[in-house]
Length: 129
Image (cartoon, rainbow, N blue to C red; front, side, top):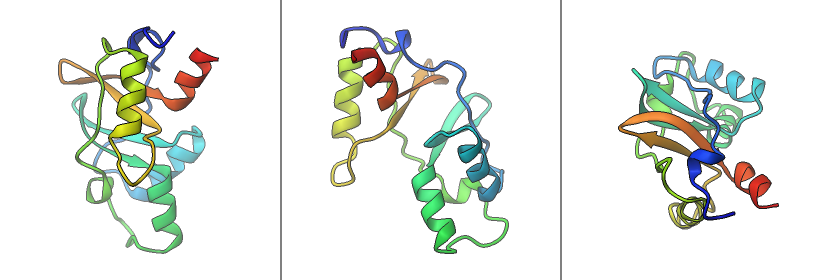
């Protein structure tokens, strides 16, 4: 099972946001769709990512000014994976790419520079068990 390709279990219909959206609206989108991260795209190109944990925590602490845009707070150095990689590779990337901060929950899937999917730890667990 862990030798299957990422493309076989990834979510293809990725919920995304754009850089000019207000952080509050992006957080509402995260909550509405019950997802833990939102890839930030511009012309189908992945330019960043935001997470529910980061945004929610900072909203609670009132760290954002009214009108703060996603592009101001997004993570720009996004860890990604290819649709041709195996599930085993995805697990290793999730485990090893965030030292000291825990395991990554989701990996955007990039093919020829374009966002084509996303794979989550939940996708992998459902596949394995």
